[in-house]
Length: 175
Image 1 (tube, rainbow, N blue to C red):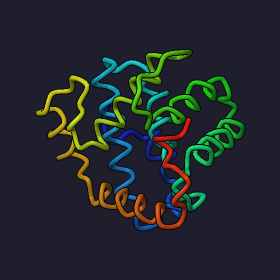
Image 2 (cartoon, rainbow, N blue to C red):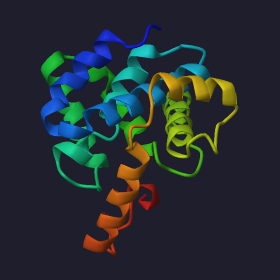
Image 3 (cartoon, helix red, strand yellow):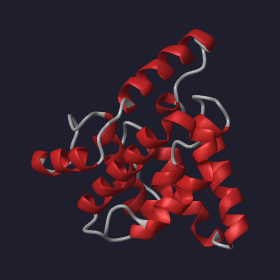
C-alpha cells in the first residue's frame, strides 16, 4: 500500500472542518493505526482497515464528546448509507466498538476486529504494547507520520472528561 492513500485522504477531507487544528494529528494517528494493521495482517483487508481507521475516533470531533464510540459508528453508518457500502457496516462497527478494549475479541470478524484493536493499542501505547511489530517498524511509521501532539491531546481529553463526567467511564471500560 502506498502512503498517503487517496481513499483515506478523501474520507479525512469530509471531516476536516470538524477536526480543525487537530486535523494533522488525527490524520497521522489514522495512518499509524492503518500501517500497524497492515503489519499485523500481512497487508490484507486494506479497504476495511482504512475505513475503520478514519472513523474509529471521529466522534470526538463531530460530536464534541469523549464518549465517542456511538457517534463514530453513527458517522460510519451515515457514510455507508450515502455510498451504498452497508455490507461492511457490521464488521467496521465491531472494529470501532472494540478498538479500546483491553481483552481479546472473539466473535464475528475476529481477525479484522482483533487486528484493529491491537493496531490501535500499539499506537496509543506508543509501542509499549506492540503485539509483535518490530520496534524498527514502529519507529519508521512514527517518522513518516509523527505524533504532532496526539497523545497529549488524548491525555487532556481524558482529564477533561473525568472532570465533567466523573461517573461516566471512558470507552475502554464500557461493556
